[in-house]
Amino acid sequence: MIERNGNALEVSGAMLNGNATALLEAGRGLLRAAEKTAALQIDLSAVTETDASALAVVFAWLRTAQQAGIELRIASLPASMVSQAKLYGVFETLPLA
Picture 1 (cartoon, rainbow, N blue to C red):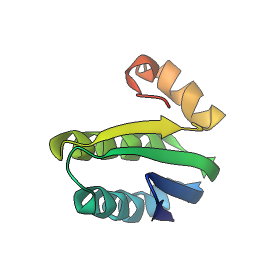
Picture 2: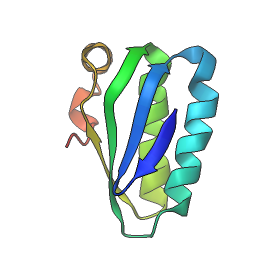
Picture 3: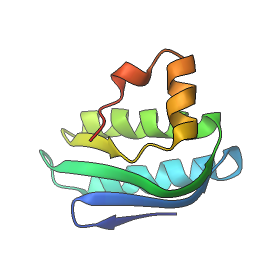
């Protein structure tokens, strides 16, 4: 699940292949509804489980935000996503909060 709370988009529960499309679209909808030039943070502190699709969803949200002129930062990246991002050589490209 993802919901907006002030300047944060808070993600909770599992970020797995089975719900990746729903999370992707929900996040994109929230980003498109945000003000242009807004600065938002994606808070992943309540994420309980991830697989490789979680990283793909986050990168898609980053692209959507960039296209909308929104500065987006990632907070509380789960250890599993840190490991995957380092494995794939993309960790340094993540705009961490």
